[in-house]
Length: 209
Image (tube, rainbow, N blue to C red; front, side):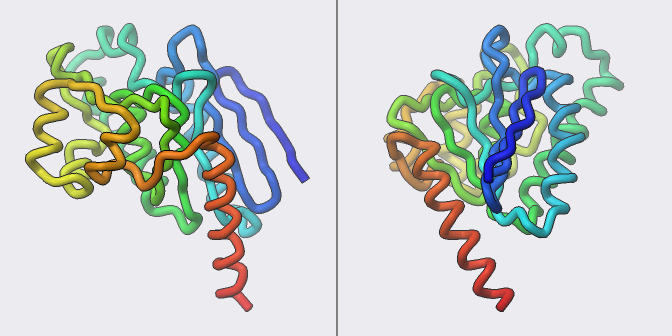
């Protein structure tokens, strides 16, 4: 049984014991705006609290997985609100990292800035052959505040992480796989993520028996 709940910028689908959260804000390249963060804060805890959900898959639309925080919103932040905004994203992504369920990022295209931080918080990252990764903060005079500075070095090593942070260089899905940033490159990526999710669900079900 599949149940889909559309929201402005976020689509939530429940397919059996798998929840799919799809970013769908084409006008802003699927930015993780304040609106999207609010929707994630509203929807995600309820999903993670469900005993019948064993895997959560994050994905995007067309050629974009998601981009980082909305740049227009960032320019309006004051020092005190910037700190709160950073803490908000960290708490949300830590919720993903601590989830009982297997969390999978099905990275279908551009995965930039804060979206990369979200993917890093997941247990598994699968990329499309068209996926592109970058932490572009250096070109804007900022650096990510949503946990990526900690999770990326742990995953790919300090030197490689620093190079990506300081140069804002874009890398392909294949290079991301080569350096350990993603686990697999596969097309169609959502199909592969759902296969992995189904396997995870079976393992969790067997452990309960």
